Length: 634
Image (cartoon, rainbow, N blue to C red; front, side):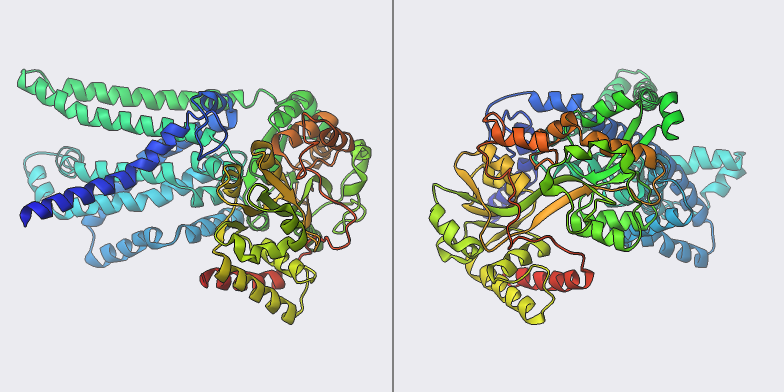
């Protein structure tokens, strides 16, 4: 019986280890993938490591992550340890009260703490950046240090300090020579937890940073919008560094023990280890200083004189820029551009309402309409934007801003169906349109975009309704349509992973944005794109200038620059969405080497059944509730 139990335990242990370590091995292997795919290996290559090291934004994020984690750990460990020691000598009432307060940041959901800090810094009108991010990290690390140190203090003899002082020690000597060595394991554990928490944090960091200061977690999150295998390369290096550190930590005690047996002083090893750590910290700080000085190299006195400032703050969706757009603008105008990314219009809106200041933001059509209605945008200075004449007629005078008073299109596109024409008859797609998503012949083979806005759009259009309808009966009909699709088709709800999924042909049909579809069709020749005749969402993301922009003059200059042929071409070639520049659009759709054969690149215009979303927060709250119910019924 014992033997069977032992075998069973070993099997469970093996499966558990595989569960934990196979994903790590997967990341390491795919960091050497020659293909852009995150799931299909296309041959050995170091291209993503090269791209990672050439990406200054990624390297800065790594540097900021390490510096903030180290400083936050040191400060939190010192403050947490001293507080725990002082608290151990306080009255019971004070101890309990402080312990309850200390537990709050640990028990609170991260999002609550993040929003609280965001509002706190906004009320104090503190400029978000390195300082606010560091303060936030120190704040949420201290409780973990205290929770680690306090149990060790409770296990000590309460008369230990008195005994040390009776033997001639000063209070400081009693603290450093007697108490601290006794609770050292708790201090070390607290420091390691603090470092891990700081290095790993995303939610609190996202809401408390600004001015282009990003850590690895924020960078990876914003990069995940598009397929970017450089994430695998970065993750592999982090894994290797952690493995190296763990190796050193485990080897040092063995070497120390051996030296002690040989009669050598064990302190030498400790001193060397400490010297190595100190050297790493010094290099990190020096690197940060050098990085900071290098980031200032584009500053130009001429730019300050002309625009009033030489820094432009740009806020846009992640992975939404050409490879050389920003660097070329900085060189040409002698300025520095701080780029920050958001993952949704609603997240962007939250930060703007909290008082964050940007010079140019790039929201979607319905959000621009909301910002205009709330008087949050300033009119463009069209005398500084002569390149408006380069724009395609199809994107001029959009319904949310008919005279382009506040906005200039950045990208535009549609929502449609990507399908595998080897498995799905194009005639079926064309005849059924959105209804194909309820055709049980394809049950279990569809991706649906996990968005109430896009999902209700396709239901409304399939039923012949406007996607901006407020009619309760039509909304209920759309809900029932989606509910039936959910219950009969076994759809997989996805977001940006749909790109990789369809590139590799894991499903036969997917609801996809046109720019993402362009990438899919470019990578997989078995895929086609179709915009249903029932109508679809024709959307537009545009550049606008908030009223509280610190540098509106340079903001207008940047908008004008983005309409040049060079910038527009780099942008659309890299990202895949349709350019508003008429010349670039013509070249992209006429050259066989570009997107002439790619049906997804060209959105249709002038089609009566197509619409744009209007801002209707009440309607979206209702659709959001119904969408949750649809997915819960699965």
